[in-house]
Length: 419
Image 1 (cartoon, rainbow, N blue to C red):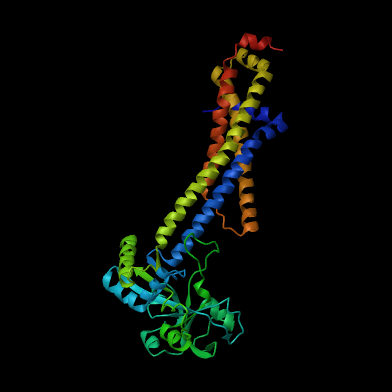
Image 2 (image 1 turned 180 degrees about the vertical axis):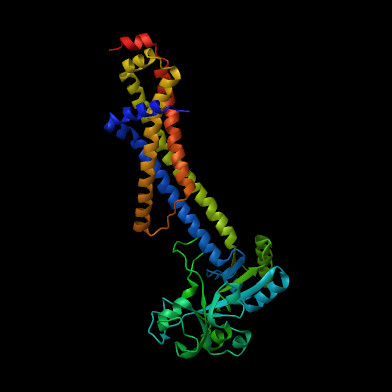
């Protein structure tokens, strides 16, 4: 237990030399600030990635159509041997994989005109989807109903709007029963769906899209009323651009993805005109990348703390020489070696701890500035604050121990004779 008089004496020693104490703690201030700022970037990126992947679905496998590039004979032959991603692929996957809850396909439509409000077509995506897509994609129904198999089979002139698209087109989300014109076709709005919004930073290996800004049409309607005629010499259009496989909870998602890939290769005559994406695997990859980033940034910030600790040791050693006579007087008046050690340890630890607290404040300000200037998401966890404060105190103890021991081991007689 540290005696209160030693604590007060240590604080007085620092107060008597405020400029020296402040300069001594600068290394700790900047080191801790760097740690907080770097950890905030890493933590923010990790939370954002996890939120975005969660929106895609941790229980989903996504199959994306991929064009076969090139004009070689091999590429041309591959294009001729496959029809691309099709609805029949989804049926085959449902039959081959009992682990699937639902399969949903979609086809993007390049709409050139949207009404009732003139809206830039690049802001809103128009897609044809089958009856299972909205469920497989995990979209919540806000109003009305979802698309039905009957809508698909009858090529019905109906649509479901994402809540963001509804507000852009009508200025409100109360739109069930109203009409939307896509190019020259008028469609009845039968429902509104919503997906929670997320940040804008992409996850490696996956393009992030806001499904709130979409107009969903029955797939049969898109293929029957909007699909342009295929011209000879052009690559044949695929029936689907993407399929989402919703996996039952508790199942091995990566195992499902492997079986899906083998099944699709067999159906596509061993032509890889698709890509299988596992959001859960992307999340793990993002975590590993972020952990490496945090490690590198932590090492860089740790160098600053090391330099700060060396600065504290240097100043404390100089202080021992400067206060040699004071040490002799204290020993002559009955102070023990342990008391002298504690006196100097209090000073070094206080410098380091106060520097750490100032560094935490500076780090929080830096994280806020980084977020405002770059648009990145930053987040500071309580554990990182506690860790930074603990490390700063530890630096003071570690680098103050040698000066404290040197002061305590002085010969009291020689110390009193010191000029």
